[in-house]
Each structure stands twice: as C-alpha cells, then as structure tokens.
Length: 197
Ligand SMILES: [Zn+2]
Image (cartoon, rainbow, N blue to C red; front, side):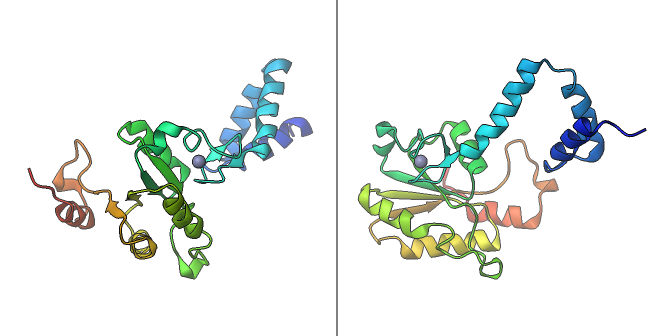
C-alpha cells in the first residue's frame, strides 16, 4: 500500500532534517496528520518565517532585526569585552551559564585552509574593527580545542592590537568527570590550564 502523496511530501521534507530517518519522519507525519488546521497553519507559518531570519550585522548571531538583542543592549557594552565563539550553539551555552555579560563575535567556524575557510569567511576583519570602535579591553577566545581551533586562536591573538588582553577559556575535566575515563588530550589540556588554589 502506498501512502497518499500529501503524506509522502511531508515525510520527504521531515527526513531532510539531520538525524531524522524515514521511519521517524513517517511516524511524525502521521502524528501531524491529526493536528487541527489552526495548528498546522501556525507550524507552516513558523517554517516559512525562518526564511526571513537575519544575522546580526555586528556579531553574526541570529536575529529578527539588523542588530541582535545582545548587541543592542547598552549594558553589555559596559564590560568592554567580546567573547569569540565558533557557532550560535556555543554562544547559547555561554549565555546559559550566566557567567558572562559582555558581547560576542560568532565566527561561524574555524580557520581551515584545506576547506577554503580563511579569515574573510570568519569575518575577522569586521571583528577587529569592532574591537577598536567599541573600545574593547578584553577578548575571550571560547573556541573549542582542536588543531584548527588552536590555529584560529593564535591568528586572532596575532591580529588584535597589542593593548588588548586576550584570554582563552580553560578546557579540562568536566564537572563530575573522572580522570580514569578521560582521553589523554583532555587530561593534558586540563594540566595545561591549571590554576593556583
Ligand atoms: Zn549581535
């Protein structure tokens, strides 16, 4: 038995979502088929509106306006610091921690010459301009530890004006973690980032 075209179309669209296989897409589509017209319309509208999503002209965060909520908040400029992250989810993770009240720069990746990702792709030029124009005194590099991440941090440190304090966040043993189960790289990084008690 073949399902009607209307259902097949939805299954086809849902299975484009990473991590959603054919079976899950079919199950979810059959659930959606029971929704009211009103709920289906708002679901469809929300998807359609995604096409209008903007990126903040200053930091690169997703935004409904030209400038995101964080960049347009004058309180967050008072910290005189910019935290550099690889992507939006890293920015959200730091925001969730509640320990940071400055601005962000979202790179959208890390330097990777083999994949054609250079300083222009990561908008490092506009980041440096922003550091100067906002009178930033401290840059925090919250880039994940990897060969490319380390190279990206070294590059940024090199192109920033000398009077800016540049810190890289420490990586190491996760809370509740046990040394026994960690890989050697994590332990090495943890030792490297040790702090005085
Ligand atoms: Zn912004």
